[in-house]
Image (cartoon, rainbow, N blue to C red):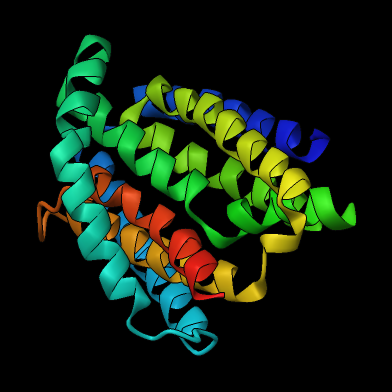
Length: 223
C-alpha cells in the first residue's frame, strides 16, 4: 500500500502548491488554465479509449456498459446527491472541481492497474509513475479550483485501497481483458469530463460511473 500512500501524498502536496498559485492568478489566467486542462482531458481520454479498444474481445461491451451504468446512475441520482454534498464546500465550483479531480485521479489506467500490480506482482512502478503525474495534475487543478482538490486524495486512498484488497482476494478472476474493458470506459469518462470543462457539453459524468462495474459482471458471466 505504500505506493498508494505516495500517490495520495503527491496529490496533497500538489494541491497545496496549486492553491498558493491560485491566489495570484487573475480570471484570464484561470480561464486559460481551464482550457488547457480540458484539452488534456480530451487527449488522455481519447488515447486510453483507442489504445484499449484494440485489445477488446467484446467490442460492443462499452456501449452496453455505458447505457446500463447510466440508467443505474440516473436512478440513484448520483450527480444530484454529489452536488448536495459538495454544496456545503462551496457550491457548483467545488462540485465541478471534485468530480473532475476524481475522474483524473481514479479512473485513469495507471490508477486502476497500479494497485493490481502492487498486490499481485509487488510492482510499484505504475503507482510511483501515477503519483508523479497526479502531483503535476493536482497543481493545475488546484490552481483552477482551489484546496478542494486535496479531498480527491482521500477518495483516491479509498479507491486504490479497495482495488488492492480486491486484487488480493480475487487474483484469479482478474485478466488483461477485464482491465482493457474498464480502461475503455474510463477513457470515455475522462474524455467527456474534458468536454464539460471546455463547456462544450453538460453530460452527467457521475451518473455514468456505475458503467465501470458492468464489465466485471459481464465477463464473469461470459466465462
